[in-house]
Length: 77
Image (cartoon, rainbow, N blue to C red; front, side, top):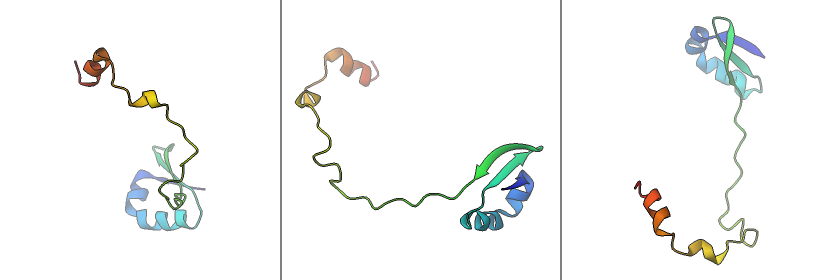
């Protein structure tokens, strides 16, 4: 894992991103103290509509009107 200071990170961001894409982690430090870590993002899976159909149950009372007091709170009153 490489450690670079903020100035070097700003100057060589493209090179650092290439290192991260290759699987390396890069730590960015300020005054020698680690502040942030660059790591590769995990690819997202394909989103499918209806993927949770039949797996989640919502009680019918979920759709009941809220009490007046709670409505006022939601509306900032």
